[in-house]
Image 1 (tube, rainbow, N blue to C red):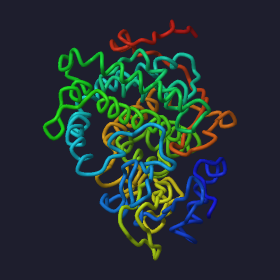
Image 2: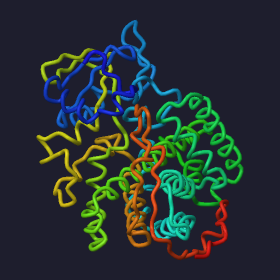
Image 3: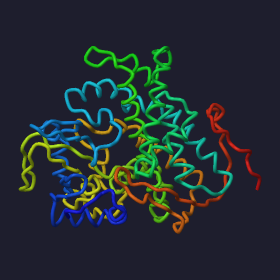
Image 4: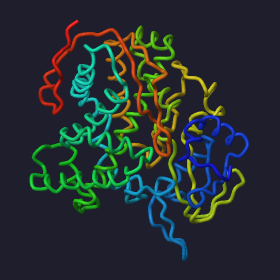
Length: 417
C-alpha cells in the first residue's frame, strides 16, 4: 500500500478493486508518494473527517511549529487555489453564506426553462446526423454552456474553458500553464465587469457587489470564487454524463425502465452519482492529534478521503458493486462531499443531468455506443472521466429553440435524408 498513487494509470484502470482491497485489509493506508499521505476508504471514517473541519482542515500553507505544509484539498496541492474549497470556517462559511442562495434549489428551479433550451440546442447540433460523441458533443459543451450562462460569463469562450478544465483534471502536459491562462481570462472579465457591477443581476454581479463580514470582495477573490465554481461545475458534470450514457448503453433493461417511467430519472441520477463518483477523492490536513481505526494522526499529516471507496462500502450500500435504480439510500453517496464543504452545485448538477437524460431518452432512445472506440482518461487524479464515447442512433428533427439564435456556435444547415 505504501506506493498507492491515485495519479497512476494502474489506479485509473483498477480503482474499484484497489479501494475494496484497502477497505478490507487496510482501511487506513499510508502512501509514500507525493511527500506522504494516508488514505481512508471506509464510508464512516471519511464522513467523520469531512464532518470535523476543526481537526481536518482544508487551508493551504499551514504552519505546525517549524514545519510548513502546503495543504489544500488535493494531493499534491493544486497549482491554482480552489477558492472556498481551500478555506476553513469561519472564513469559508462567510463566503458560503454569500453564494449559497444563488445556487439554492429555488434558484436552480427558476433556471430550469433556460437550461432546457441549452440542452435542446446541444442535442439539435447532432440530432439529424444519426451519430454523436457523447463526450465531445454533449458532455463537453453542455456543462460549460450551463455554467457560463448561469454564472453570467460570456458564452463565446465556452470551448476554451471546457477544453482547459477537461485536460487539467488528468494532468495532460501543458495543462497547468493553460489553467493559469484561464484564470487570467476570468480575472480580466472581473476587472471589466467591475465598472458596471450590479447592472445585470447575475452571479458575477452578486460577487462584485456582495460583502463578506461587512467588507466588499476584491477582484482577486471574485476571480478565485468564479474559478472554483467553474472548476467544480464543468468537468465533474462532463464525467458523469459520459458514465451515465455509457452505462445505459450497455444496460438496455435499465434504459427501457427510465424511458417507460421518466419520473424515476432523479433517483437514477443519485445512483449514478454513487456508483460513478466524478471526483475521485478529497484531501485534508490534520490540525490536532486524532485517532482513526487505531491509527494515530499528528498535526501536519495529510489525509486523502477516497470518495469512490466510501460510495462502494458494503456496510452502507447493499450490493455496492451493482447499479440498482431502485436503491433506497443512493442519496447517501458522498460524491458532493459532506459537511461545511458540501458542493455548492449539488442542486445545479442533478438538475442538469436530469434534464439531459430525459431529453436524450426522448429524442435518441435507441442510441448504440461503439464500446470499442470508447476512451477513458489515462489517469484520474481529480476526476474520473472520458475522452471519447461515439454512438449512433436514429436521426430525428431539431426543435430549434429561440435561445439557439443567441449562442456563439451556430447550427449547421440540417441534413436531408
